[in-house]
Image (cartoon, rainbow, N blue to C red):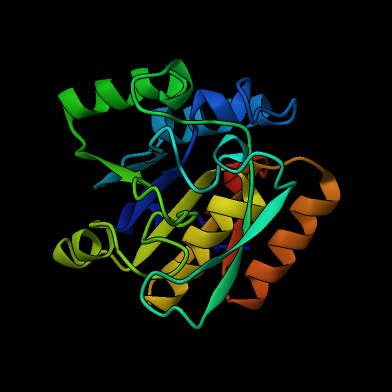
Length: 229
């Protein structure tokens, strides 16, 4: 476990893909809404020097959409953009998080809090990812092939951030990718275990065990604060 809330004040909150399509939309899960009170708590009760909110931001013909590959099944093999000899398996999903749709929007309670913080005391940076129609992007740092990176790494360095506190959806995809890339880039990564979810207990436990192997720390907001400080 992370040793206490003092770490938050030196870190940056990273809210991964808390978008309508991942909650009650085309890729929604009945488990997803239960993390929202925890994210509200983090935004309402703690001061942050910066906050990042990432969003999947897919063009309509994105490579991850099953509709782009009729009859292909659950996945396809695609070549790397920079190295034709390398192949990766691309999972296929229903269309989701297309710009200018309800599904791409950040959940209302989270977005309302972010707008309030933006206007009051805290810079909020919105990271749009997976905009290249030819490659997917789970991580808020860059795409799955490391062909193109977002501004997240440079912004963290610019503000001398050493620790990132990760929440969001889903644990075994975009939260996993963001957390691992955070470690690869040399940051301390703290995962808020009860502020992330996926489709099953087994999938969540497996993802968290893998992240612990990458030296990601985990923290439960359900633990009373007085026991930690």
